Structure formats: C-alpha cells, structure tokens
Length: 453
Ligand SMILES: Cc1cc2nc3c(=O)[nH]c(=O)nc-3n(C[C@H](O)[C@H](O)[C@H](O)COP(=O)(O)OP(=O)(O)OC[C@H]3O[C@@H](n4cnc5c(N)ncnc54)[C@H](O)[C@@H]3O)c2cc1C
Image 1 (cartoon, rainbow, N blue to C red):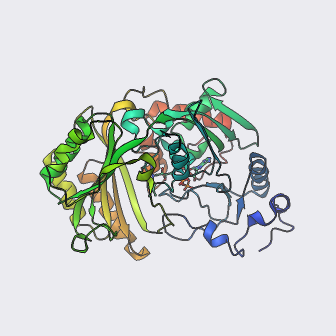
Image 2 (image 1 turned 30 degrees about the vertical axis):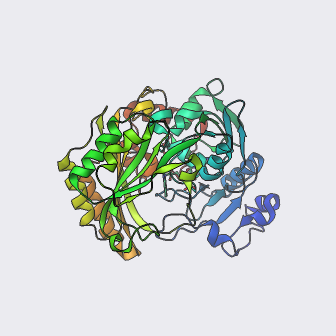
Image 3 (image 1 turned 180 degrees about the horizontal axis):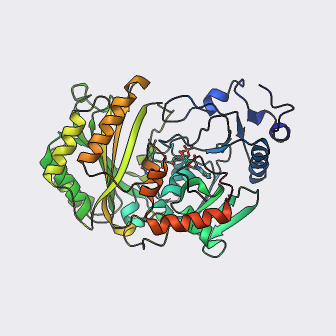
C-alpha cells in the first residue's frame, strides 16, 4: 500500500521513509510489542522525531479518520501501542536523556527507556525510581504510576514527576507542571496516555550510589513466603522490591533441577547502609540462590532484551494497609495456585507504604496510597490456543487471593470500562473525565485505559 493520494500523503511528505506502511520491511518490527496476541495491523506507523511532527501526524490521522495509538517501549500488557487500521506514533527516535546533576533533574524525551536513563543518572550517583526493567518506556511507566526499587523510599515515579511537555490532540504544545496547566499535571500522574503525547518529562533525581540488591530464590514454603512479606512490610523504607511465586524460569543462573518447579523469587534493593541486618531474616530462610550483593544501582536494570511475545492475562489489586502482611493461609493459596497453573504463571507481590503512603490520595491521579501490597496475578500460554486456560486460571487465582475490585493501569491485561472504573476511585475518575473534556474532548487518545470525555 502507498500513502500517495491518501489523506496520509501530507504526513508522508513530512516524514519521508519514516512513515511505514505494512509493505515496508521495518513494519513488522515496529508493530511487534512485548506481549503477543491476536494480530493487530495498523494502517501505518509514523516514526516521529519532534513535537512538530507529532502535531502533523495527529492532524493527518484526524483528517483521514484514523484512530491513533502511541508506542514507546511497547511493554503494556493490553497492547495499547497497536491499533487495528489506525496510525501508530512510534516515539522511539525521541529517546534523548539529559541529566542535570546540579539542578537534581533528569529530562527524558517521550520515547526514552528506563534503562538508558538509569545508566546516565548513575554516572552522577543519582537515580529516579522506575520499575525493575530497563526496556520499559519512561513515559509509559510514569503516566500509570511507576512502582519499583526505590518506591518505599522516594515514592512512585509519578511522585517525582516535576513537569512535562505535551502535544495535545489539536496540535498545541503545552507545559504541565505545578504552575502551568496544573489540572493536566495532576492527570498525567496516573491517568495514563489519555491526554496527549508526552514529548518530555522532567523527573526529580535522588542520591543513589551503591545499593545492596539482586535476586534471592527459596523453596515454596508458606511460612517462608509469609516471613519474606513481613520483612518487606515492616522493613525500613530503604528496602523495596518484589516477590514472585512462580515456576522457576530456564534462566542461566537457575540450576537445571529447579527449572519449571514452583519457587519463591525476590528481586530486592536496599539503598541504605544497614542492609545486612535488614536482610538477615531472608537469609535465615536458607535461600536456594542468593545473588544479593553490593552493586551500583543501574546494575539492577540489566537485561530487558527483545520482546518475548508471550501471550497471557494479568490482573492486579491491592491488599491490606500500613505494615500488614499476608498470613500463611494466603501464602499457601498463592503457592497452590501457581503449582496448579496450566502454563507459565506468577503471583507478583510488591510492598507499598513508606513514601508512597505519605502522598494524599487526591494529590495525583494515582489514588491507591494506603494499601500495604500490590498483587498481580499473571497466567501465560506458550501459544494462542492456550490463552483461554491461562485466562481462566488468572481469574480463579485472582479471586482466591482477593485480587479484585481495584487495579493498577500499568499491570492490567484488559482495558475495558470496568477496568477503568476499578483503577480509579469515583472522585478520581470524575476529575479525570473533566480534564479529558478540556484537553482531548474528541477522545483522540483512546488506545489506552480510556477515560471517556
Ligand atoms: C517486563 C515488564 C516489566 C515491568 N515492570 C514494571 C515495574 O517494575 N513497575 C511498574 O510500575 N510497571 C512495570 N511494567 C509495566 C509498564 O510500566 C507499563 O506496561 C508501561 O505502560 C510500559 O510503557 P512502554 O512505553 O514500555 O509501553 P507501550 O506499550 O509502548 O506504551 C504503553 C502506553 O503508554 C502510553 N504512552 C507511552 N509513552 C507515551 C508518551 N510519550 N506519551 C503519551 N502516552 C504514552 C500510551 O498510551 C501507550 O500505548 C512492566 C512491564 C513489563 C512488560
């Protein structure tokens, strides 16, 4: 297909060979994302390089009546980055990162990834907390919330967003921060990709040099899991991380005899000085593997290679409050669920609290400030005919573990209006809709957990 003589012709003139149609050799790569699934074939992909080109692309899509999707790291489980028959704005050429150590601010363009940003900041002994994976997009993780290795100490990524530059649906380029368009600034901190294309994010940097972190793995015992979770909930704020109840992956560091067997696997980061004492209860559980050691913070963000293309479902909810942690009965249910999964599966448990809980629930569009834990249940399949069984397992396991009712938009495998209502408490959703009517009244940015105008 050629864009010549179509409503996309002006865009083809502006972008040249950076407007890709399905016959282009690079089209398959630009439309491959981290999670696999039924084919979604966009009409074209615009590999934009500036806010001006984004505005041109948005105008062309509107003129052509095409739906729009925004793609950066390509990691969202709901595959928002692809829209059938629409125009994908691929931001990956907009990947600049600037670390202003003197000002304590990191500036990332809209398609930058967490790994390169973390490496650049690390050269100055500084960091902004994202998640645990370097190939995730900075904007994508930030717009949904951003929970990871530094969250209990320095808050979610949204709590460190100082301001952003945004291309709105009508092509205007605006600033959103505490002084300019504060309503948009509020909405960007949890409201996802609903309001415009973010071309720059200004993020607060913290002094984070050498940390104690890495992976530990244990036998799947309920007492052990309850102890690990209690240690995380009650530990100092310098300790963040996550625990997976999962089938051991075929990774190089995992001994052959453990692969495919249920295990407890934690990814940990202690950014303070008393790590040995804090981690002692975890070591008393006699880990099968203990890779936790001192290392420069960016060392935790290794890997994050090409898209694995796995197919699956993902549900997320929140449990408890304060320093509460799940008991052995809950731990037993988690281990039993994973042991009975029809394919690769994990229950992922992340401690919250600390700096996350010190932010008022109304201060940002991410409103889940009180819970003690975020719990995600993910069932996967090796091929598409295994998807129904993976979905059924995910739903059953999520119900058994009390993962229901409220969710985190960055960890949701579906994007229905029920999911949107689950992700945002009523007052938050009402305010998001009001702001959507101001900044995107025609709902141009719908390929996301869509806030309806
Ligand atoms: C392996 C893996 C590990 C993860 N780990 C964590 C973690 O530790 N913590 C955590 O909180 N989350 C984590 N996530 C979830 C991740 O934060 C979300 O999936 C996020 O949306 C990914 O952003 P992306 O750019 O990579 O994905 P994409 O699929 O490219 O983007 C997702 C959506 O975000 C929006 N978006 C992205 N960039 C822009 C932009 N510049 N302007 C406007 N909208 C934009 C768009 O709606 C887009 O469709 C993980 C996901 C995976 C697959």
